[in-house]
Image 1: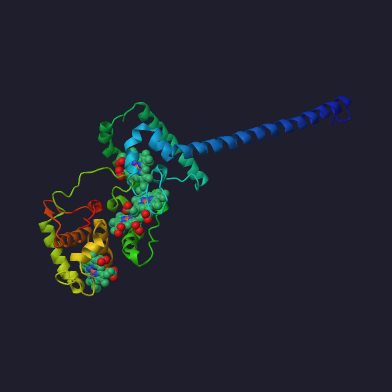
Image 2: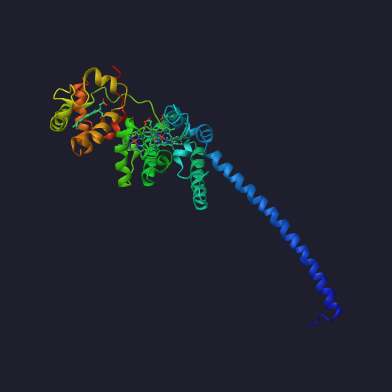
Length: 313
Ligand code: HEC
Ligand code: HEC
Ligand code: HEC
Ligand code: HEC
């Protein structure tokens, strides 16, 4: 309306100039912010990775000395494949490398909460000696186990696909794990106790592997379902012998879990039966008895006990 006015023209020119300057001003600041943002994101990501590393969790943090030592004894630290699972890969339910934006934010919250707690306990030196560690360990272990159970063992399943046990030697593993996938319910530690950390433990087998009553119950089940193929004296038939040299060659030095898995998985199928966990433990007890392992006061009742290894000879 007032553009004819000379004052108006000058004013709008100045405004145009300031307009340009402002664009320049805004865009340089935007650049600076973008740069800082990227830098911050990179640093954060670096901090997340660094603070989840074995070096940080296992060495820098003094309270973790013993947990780290026990981890160094486990298959996840040393194995034939040469792939190592780090502290974070089992303990943190988000993978910073493959997280979606939402997961990444959750990861940051997770890290922040843990970080504050861990820093507090570390600075309080609440675990400074081995004795203090041993006192706290059961509770810490239970805590983490509950956490894993609540999250359906997501960290374990991130590396282990339960349906990819292939080949004739893995049939048993496939049968056993398929059930969990169908039920969408996983409790890995129920069968794979001591999988992340192996602490020195006094042998639980000094006073026997199973009870006599249990082996007797197992004998009946065996007679009903297994003798047809394995023989009344376990001498073999359509199936291999389950005693003597054959047994030792096959199972010496392996975990009880391997034999139990055969019974509970493919052999129950062969026999056209479904055994409860306890029934398959009973049959296992009978096989142990027939192979000269000592009976004791306590029956085998818990699949966690199956991590024990059978003698080589
Ligand atoms: C293969 C997976 C795995 C890896 C790798 C792993 N952990 Fe664990 N961790 C577990 C499981 C499972 C438990 C709970 C049950 C148990 O004690 O075994 C656990 C328990 C713990 C506990 C509680 C105390 C205890 O031992 O029960 C601490 C502390 C711990 N881990 C710290 C660490 C640190 C530090 C590292 C790396 C140096 C690490 N973990 C590596 C799986 C793992
Ligand atoms: C970073 C990947 C990774 C993660 C996470 C992981 N594992 Fe493993 N796991 C491996 C590798 C590698 C091996 C060694 C494979 C081999 O020796 O053939 C292995 C071996 C095993 C074995 C067989 C060896 C044994 O000692 O019995 C079991 C069982 C197992 N893992 C269970 C678990 C469970 C349970 C968890 C979760 C607490 C877990 N894994 C987490 C990679 C992983
Ligand atoms: C009901 C018991 C049971 C549960 C629960 C279980 N497993 Fe297993 N798993 C077995 C048996 C039995 C074997 C075979 C043991 C053997 O012969 O070494 C096995 C073997 C394995 C192996 C070793 C394969 C190899 O080739 O050495 C891996 C890895 C494994 N399980 C991962 C897992 C993971 C991960 C979970 C939880 C999501 C899990 N298992 C839950 C019974 C179980
Ligand atoms: C239909 C015949 C048949 C029946 C019934 C049967 N098995 Fe088997 N069993 C076999 C054969 C064949 C093998 C060899 C491996 C395979 O084919 O999976 C075997 C392997 C085994 C193994 C592993 C031995 C090895 O050397 O690998 C065990 C342990 C076993 N059976 C126990 C039992 C038990 C316990 C029962 C009763 C619940 C039973 N079997 C029922 C035929 C049978």
